[in-house]
Amino acid sequence: MNNKVSEIIFKPYPPIDLGADDINPAIRLFGRRFFSDQTVLEFLVEFLLVVYSPKKIMDTESFNSFFPDRVVLQNWNQNKSLSYNPPARLNLKLFSFIGASKLETRHESHKKHYEDILDKLRNRIRIYSASLGEKDDILRTLENLFLGFQGAGYDRTWCTQSFIPISAKVLAREIIWEQTKAKRNSVKDWSEALEYFSHSQHLFLARGGELLYLQLCNALRQSSGGIDSLSRRLGISLNDIEADPAKLYDALGNAFNTIMAHCPPALDKIALLIDQIDGETVQRTDGETDNERFTPCGWCPEDSWMEGYLFAVEFLRVCQAEIDPIERIEMLKLCCAFQVLRSLCAQSARVVLWSKERLSNGNGLKFIWAISSPSGEDNIVKQVSQRNLKAIQQLIYNAIRIPEIKGNVDKYYRKTSAQSLYKEADTRYGDRFFLSLSKKIGFVVPKKGPGARFVLSDHIIRYLVLALMRPGERCTLDTFKDLMFAHYGLAIDGKYIQRVCAWSDYPSLSESETGNDDWLVQKLRASGFLIHLSDACSLVQNPFGNQRG
Image (tube, rainbow, N blue to C red):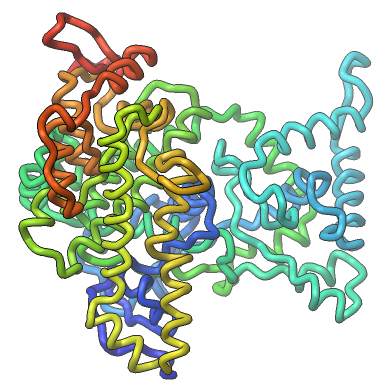
């Protein structure tokens, strides 16, 4: 097979040539890449890694700003890919996670280096009061402190685990220990072992965060006129900053400056001390002059700028909310996860050969998700939601099999190989990935067994209030439901359930069969998001700010 794929079906952004890695039909449609093995937290971790790491475009000088200049975004040169250089944090990971890793993954050289790190830290500790305990007590406390920020990869080798992104000083690239090679070559000490850590495999930080970052770049290069047209098409209201891509570009930069500022400076200093306690490790894994350390980003579909712009607005609103820093991380995890789900549906709806009448019943991005009550008491709406979920999966399944994609796959693969490729696309990138990610965040229940349907948990409702409303803003309950539909195609009762029926090719229901929003009202009230004015009017409020909308 050729290393270069010349037929470009969908324009990539940045405008780079597609290669052999892009032949998978789901990657050809959705970009490189959303992948089932990446955890929800790791979508956010990888996204923030790109944001906070030094970056460069091909052979140009690296830059430390959060985004390339807008002029570059708007005039990106052909075949100039974006790369970034995230730190490995190998000493910090070893110190924090080796005690919680599987015994069989602890190579003798790793254990020896761990002891070396402890010895070097002991020499740096000064105890001025007996009440502080012994040096080993302090080391155990620090180890437990950083282990408490373990975020993903509990069942993996210590070096493949990720921290909760409480600070830019704990963000670390994916490092894979090549155990088989090390054993074959009889590696004994840490200096030798450093040659057997791979930083380029993308097994768990699998490029999903990179794709989300590129969607933001793609969105922020748009014109104000294009955003005005988008907001009218979707039926959403944006303030002066949100409606202007240049101002939104600056606002996101300010948000990135502040969301990590809540971490105590002392914790940052301790993390840096531990990570830099062994200079050889830092030099050989994080050498800034080593171009090989720069990781090339993939690409996103150029047409994805619309959902990318919504993602930018929602991410900004969550960052601006006056909430606990750990809760903000949880909300940003959901923001990334819902953007992945929305991207799969929006891009599929652009290409699938369904009737215009059917697709017109979706939101402005042409899809719709039918929400049933968490209890499932309303059997009719519950069945509509189940059928709608199957229709969503069928949409994604059909989209990666359009003639332009299928013909390209058939050109490069024999029939049996093409079937295997599609099986992988469905499971790891396509409709079954959509289902598994939805279940991971509690958006689809049950996790196992038949009857899967869409629901909104308390956690998701909290996120929707933060993402769809600016801090301090209020709106009527009906307006809030309109916003849920505009941003995410969420359909709750009444007119929207009727649209679900048409979109999912399901018989229409009578008004009495389309359910009600009583369960949503109860959840909003219990969470403190609902202000009851009268029997005919209730206001939904985002209380996490001083502004008033």
